[in-house]
Length: 574
Image 1: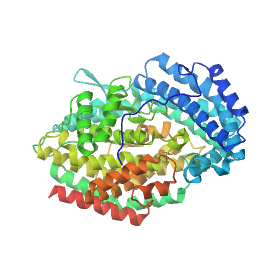
Image 2: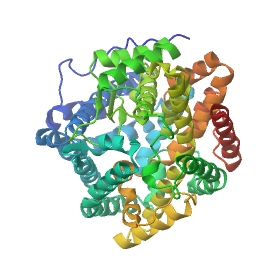
Image 3: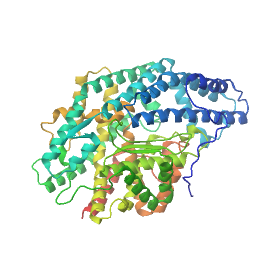
């Protein structure tokens, strides 16, 4: 099947073409009309669903643009106020109507006659939303949405001075590639000290978020936020016990591989102790990889890489370039991290990241590019609710793209030795990311199982979890204060609670896709596109099956997939 990136903004048939959301009063009539409308026949029900979907898309895109603009410039108070206004004065009014419309749908006479092959997951999500909705949670969720954005404001303002110049923390990371170990160590300390300066405000912010989230769960009848959030995230196909099993499997089957990688690095550098500032430097005479210099160059090279892999993939990025749906370079005042934001009405998503000319920026770009392709592939689905795919398949889209694209990284490197080094870096990262995923996930379980904890108890728990995944090679002596505070750099903890195990589950799926790719590239890409085009219309195991995978993150599966990556790494290194 062929796919096109010639995406067009959805044509409105329910809302006026020039309609803009300024306040709740202009939105209210549409929700009131939908709640009152007759849906007594199948035809009326289906038209009602289309009109509701259009309204959802317009509201969603408006909220997304407010957030995108604010993260691109956290220092513009008008952008912050616009986002906060939506959270505090529009979204809270929508929620009771959304609940009423959900109930109206499930009570409709002809709901059972809807095509269950397409509507099963949609209706399951509607039922879940009804079960979770509580009026008393509306102000809590509004407050939480505003608080979560403070993380980006605090961290976006972080910078260090080095040799008389200011650098964002992302830009300062370039110095960790320096051949001069003293330079690396000095900049490492500057970065960590700058993070420590915000330790107290971020702890206070996190305390507020924990309290709000715990109260949400109690209001909804849950013992803890763990059960509430699992249900809210639609984790129908696995439970906390599976996550705990994953943590232990990482210790058993991944930590030994991490240890070997770090031992090799220590030996090649010829240092008595491997320190955190030694990880990014190249050994011997090799210079740091320089895949690009500017954001525009990163984009052009990624488009070339994607076009060689599959013309449709490259066309997606070209379309986003035409629409100016990208903000790639790091700068002061910009929120940290990277994301692909789907835009429900426009179709073409927005990619945000903080590139500073390093190899991991290429990985981030192709990762977010995979998400973007997913947005394009699912846009043609007729209802907004059909496009709400599980995060565990969304991250397969991005992580598989990282691995697929390696065969085309000559777009970034014209030197065979550099290309080989880049691939080795990528496969090492595939392995070394697993312990951090397990650490963050395990920490989140502890946090919400002990919501009344003190900052000291939180720090002690974090340190204990961190130490339990130590590979025995990296020397952290004298860096205890930095280690104890390391969780604060993970924005997911603040902004998208419990979202992190998805990266581990999906990395395994991505490795499975890469195994297919190694055997038959065209078939693997066809499976990839087919699965992503289904959006959220199938269950998670069914989406994996459509991609030619099995939804399985058991210890046995982890062992097999890790062995495959290690073999590929060994082949590159010899």
